[in-house]
Image 1: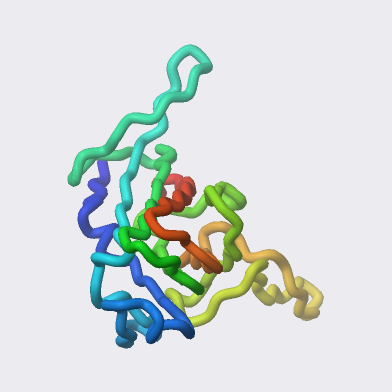
Image 2: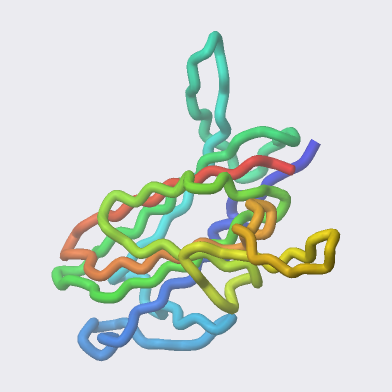
Length: 179
């Protein structure tokens, strides 16, 4: 059995507010792992919950996971990230970096966002992000070809949200398999 500490997963969230930081009261930029983070969470509140998929008689349901939960290899976990603008002003150019939890593999194309957002992925623990990650593979004949990156290579998801209006909530969900 493996344990997933949900509280630890929430700690990997990083928010970037660019370039209008000066226009948002209470938000300043700082650097942590090459990402700016919101220093004042009164403007943008983030929450992350995890659920485990339960299959019963061909019916799929989702069971909330407590802070420490035992999961088995091949279990499907769904994460819901909510970003809530708690201010009376719109927030512009919000960037949220979310790590794929250790011991899990991202299920390709499983992310859904409640409003338009640019979604990019990292294969290098959040140093670089691209829309369609690829890897170079050497063929038996020695030729190197570029192929779509396998799901196991994904380490972070980045959401770039142009605007979150005053008091608006934006939700993003994605799924992983337990290794």
